[in-house]
Length: 231
Image (cartoon, rainbow, N blue to C red; front, side, top):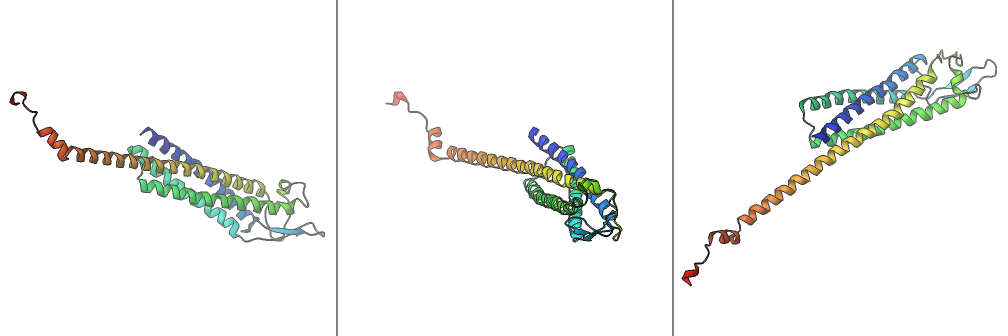
């Protein structure tokens, strides 16, 4: 029971952290798309005009930002459900079944894949955008608040901190889901170990029953000792 409580508490804490990190993805990415008029800077590139110093942007697909947002929303929903579910287990003093623990482990592994793909997408996409920015500014951060693309009417007031926060949230969420996958796997291994112990105890009990019911054992118990005077 002590190990069960530790695993449950660890899983609840992990999902609370995952919930917070999912908001670190959802909120800044939503703000970024709003400030960029629905456009996505991930993997976008362009050329600086010599006449007015504006950036002619070739916008990449909005699907990159949408995918990161969907991953964040998915993690938020899963964390909310799991926090409620595991808290009820803790309150009732019970734990999930073997099948449920196995599905948790599989689900955590899948979310690990989603999280790392979103993190890589944000990182590489942001690098592509900043490669164009540093052609004019000393650093990507220095372009914050500058009118670099008046034609599209985008606001660069917070793009650096927004994408940076989403990048941090995605990588930290990946780490968190790896930890949750480990906890779920430990629970599955514990159930498997308990099942093996129960099977071994059942087999040992059957062996003892068979031995106690064998003819040799019964004869040894039922045959009285020979009377020495009869000889």
